[in-house]
Length: 230
Image 1 (tube, rainbow, N blue to C red):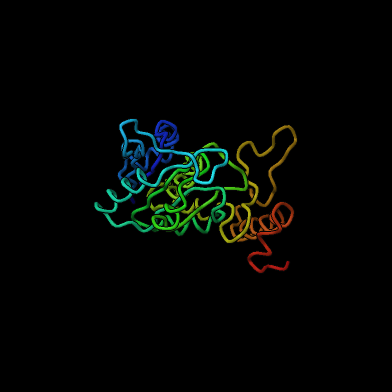
Image 2: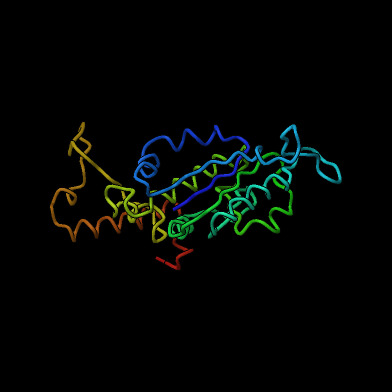
C-alpha cells in the first residue's frame, strides 16, 4: 500500500510514524508512506499557501493552487483509490471504514489547516471527507496519523498475530471483552475461573457475553446500529 500525506507542517507527522507497528510495517516494505510539504508547490516566491476569505470573516483559507499542483503531480505518477480530506465536518470515521481503506492500494490524505481549504478543492479534487470526531484540532495532521495507524495495523503481515485485529473493539459493532494476564491472583483480585479452565468453547462464549454486556453498558448505540435488540 502507498499512502501519501499532504501537509503544511511535515515535522508533526514524522514522530508518529517512526515508532512501533507503523515503523515496522514501513521497514518491511508492506507500506510506503510519503509526507509531502504543500508549501513546496506554492505559486509565489514567498511560498504562502493561505489567503483571506472572499466575503470577509475571521481566519485564513488554504489556497487551491498549491494543493492542486501537488495532487496533479501525484496523480500523474499513479492512480489513486481515494483522495481523502481530513476535516471536522466530514463523515465520522469508524472501524468499518478502516477495514475498507486497508484493502486499497494507493491513498492520499490531505491535512487541513486554518478555516479549511478552498471549497473548490473539496468540489473537484477530493473523493472522500473524513472526521475523527466532533471536535476541532489545530490541523489535520493528528487526524491523518489516526487514520494511517488504524489502516496499517489491519494489513496482512503487519501484526505478528494477524487474528488480533479481528478481535478489536468495534469489529462486528461490539466492544472487546475484558482481558487479563499473570498473575491469576493479585491482592485478592482474581481472574475469572473460566479463563483458566482451558475449555475454549466456554471461554469464547464468556468473551462474547462480556462483549455484549460491555457494549450495552458503554455503547448501546453500537447494538442499535447493528440491529441487535438484546
